[in-house]
Length: 115
Image 1 (cartoon, helix red, strand yellow):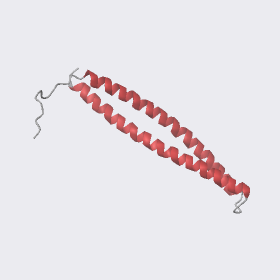
Image 2: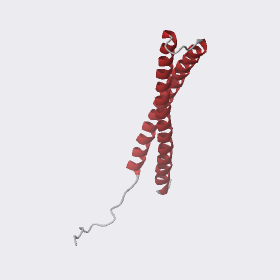
Image 3: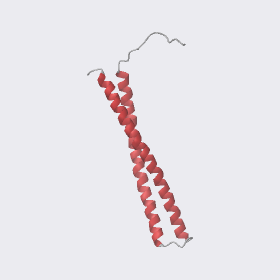
Image 4: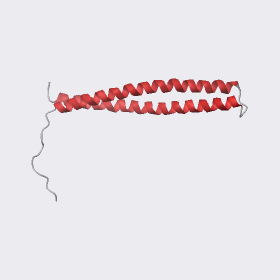
């Protein structure tokens, strides 16, 4: 194994961590949208049940579909977010281990001069 290998591997791991971070951020956005969908569907269902705006059965079915879709999306994205965060943590641990194996050299031993 050459000395460049750990450095290249660290670079690849950092690229992977960045990609995973983007996935995690996308999951967080979908989680927020899912919560909004569940809340909106619940409010629409309540309004429909109370008959405040004269909405019919179609609005009730649509609100139920919105609630169920939001719940399914929420569960899926929360699960994906957890898995992604675990993968990021494992990659960061591996990156730290690889960085610890790299033989770092001091570039200069002279003290800095302030001008």
